Amino acid sequence: MKVGIIGGGYSGLGAAYYLNKEGVNDITILEYEDHLGGLASGFKRKDWKWPIEKLIHHWFTTDSYALGIAREIGLGNKLIIKDTKSSCFYNGRIAELDSATSLLRFPFLSFLNRIRLGMAMAYLRFDGNYLKYEKETSYSFIKRSMGKEVFKVLWEPLFQGKFGKYAEQVNAAWFWARIHPRTKSLAYIEEGFDKFTEAMAESIKDNGGKIILNSRISKITKEKDKFAVYRGRKKFIFDYLILAVPLQIALKMYNFPEDYKNKFSPLNSIGAQYFVLELKNKFLEDGTYWLNINDKNFPFMMVAEHTNFVDKKNYGESHIIWVGKYLDYESPLWKLGEKELLDNIIPFLQKINPKFEKSWIKSQFFSRFKNAQPILPLNYSKKIPEIETPIKNLLMLNMNQVYPWDRGTNNALGLGYKAAKIIKKNSQKK
Image (cartoon, rainbow, N blue to C red):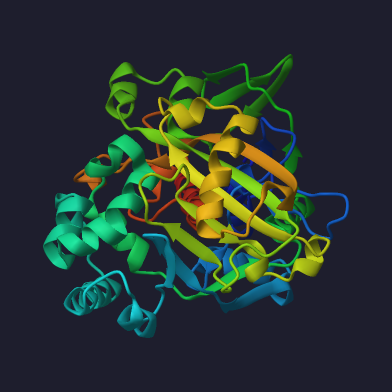
């Protein structure tokens, strides 16, 4: 049985890895870029020991697929797991908000609203039925359960920073999933996610798989019961084919029935843009790792100081921050060039830390990714694209399918696991 996988992000890698565990070894991954890892790929400066991801990445201690694979491929001793500090920036001040104790001290809400927020969050942590939440929007649910003050101070600016013009459409099941599995302890891996990606790739190749980078796919056809995939003049033949690419790209890669394409074409996604700034000095001096920006006027929604989690010695003693935001493609910020955008955000970084100066920046890395965040409207469980398409033995894996969970490497690996199980089960029917 020959399996082809188009896309070397974590869903594609996960499918190959789990297919290996099912005894399927004739696998070929065709990746468009010159590297694997998708949104989790990284870069490295010459004086750094470790690379860093272009977009912020870490795992929660509940991320069983990722942590399980890390241990299986011999990286268990490379995991860095420890408590981190998360805070909010509001009204010109930073305040920690990541535990019951910090909630009681949180200065931006009245005491009664702090209690109300804590009770609602505790309920979401223990309630396992997400489907009941998808019948109303997050906006409606938060206002009803936590109150208008909590909504205005905490959640409205974050939803607008995350979803932009789509913020009011997002259902409350997505919000439930952001709270339910969350842990104060986070996990990272020595030498970054690139190390994890490389180890997965080596495991796949050691089990007989092939990985071909710089693969621009020109055509996919079905010939009898097999798929023909064309990479320039090169033709690959597969019994099963997995399109591990964003939904809107997958719908264009194969000649699906029009009614199938029309069913899923309305599903929207937005992009993400991030700066990685290498600094001479510590930016979040109170030790905060993740800082939510609870101010709708900021041109970014979060700052995370990676070196408040991982030792700066791995980055030439520099301090590393991510500065990021999700944007629809019509946003003026999406259209700005790198220099213009950096000049735009510097005054806002100075509002967070008045000591900060542009001269602190030793280097910068900017990236934009389309299709980084799906929009999840009401009753989305009825709109999810199935992994199995109407075309026999043609599967799709994309972030629109991890619902109610949010985008992330662990959930992408989980999709790969499901795809492997489907292929194994279907192959046994023959």
